[in-house]
Amino acid sequence: MKAGMFPTRTAILSKMIIVEILPPFILAFSAISAFMLLGRMMILLQPLLMAGISIFEFLRFTAIILPSFFGFSIPIAVLLGNLLAFMRLARDSEIIALVCCGVDFRRIIRPVALFTIFLWVISLFVTIVVVPHSKTASKAFLREITEKILARGLPERTFFNPMRGLTFYVDRSSDDRKKFKGVFISDQRKDGLANNILARNGTLVPDETGSSAVLVLNSGVMTIVDSDQSSMDYLHFDKYVLKLRLPEDSGRRSRGQMSVPELYKMAYEGGARPDRRIDYRIELQKRFAIPCGVLILGLMAVPLGCLFGRSGLSGGVAIGLAAFLCYYVLMELCANISKNGIVPPEAAMWVPNVAGAVAVIFLIRKMISMEGGRR
Image (tube, rainbow, N blue to C red; front, side, top):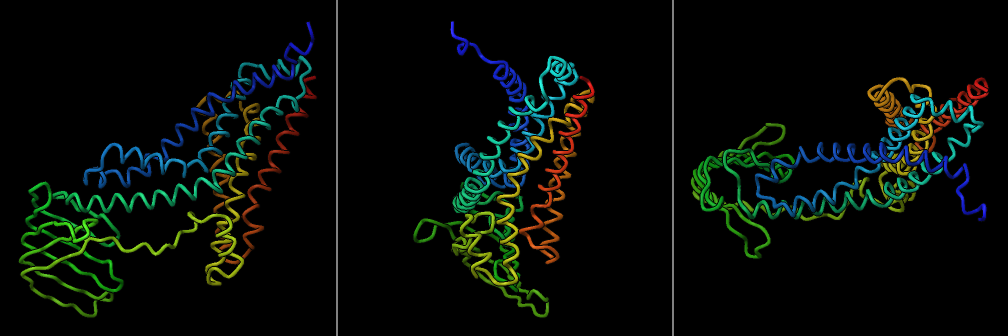
């Protein structure tokens, strides 16, 4: 039988290490993504459910918004996956057994490096392509859902904020939440003005197009106050019609929704005001610097796992989270430094990766020297 039909020792070792890494990586990735999704949903879930959002709409929104968290969940997951796997190998003395059998530490870390590079490519694609599309789609979806919410009616005895600057409170509702008694409205959608409305009753009816709704109020009072509170108007009305149409989408997108070419244009080709270009430069550098955290943290986890293998599961998670926080706190610190004009973003945003690379090289060299001592 040909020798090539049998797996080599290197292939067996690589398969063993990858099989050891995958379960904690998948578990950490799923848990972290779910935790970040839950944190976001806690802000939006209550008003959406009170407004009558369907299960299908909720699941659709979840599918749209979930990829926006992958840029952060992948680096944390690869860190914890590699760390917990090598802590387990070190705790059971399997790393020592491999070294005593003549397996070089470079051969041990090679499959981890290939796996980490693969995840780095995925993270780069997610950060550059997937996340901007996810944020754009979630914004459009929230606008669509808000319009449907307003057409469905207003919940009673709840401060309901369907759009920025507009808050409703109705004491009682009837006719499938289309008729109300005891209506309070705070309307601050116009800059420099705050309108407070109290009405005895109101009715929600569709407008002429049927795409939005208007609120017809009866027997009420309105106060109009300037933002500096220098003047106030007070008036009674028998009937007042409030349009609930959302403001037209201007087409402007936030930095997080822009593609890399759009960010480059805003940052370097005069697309933004000179005082705002620094923000676009920082965002552009983050698109490429943050995915490198997969490489830095993933490789750093291997020597850390070997050195702290006796710390247990809780100790491993604590070490992993500490390494992650140090890396990303340094990233945000460098972003603030560059925003203040002290260091250009093109240099500042790469400082955490350079510092992390130095730490990785130091830890790997330490492991290789310890391996030589055991031999």
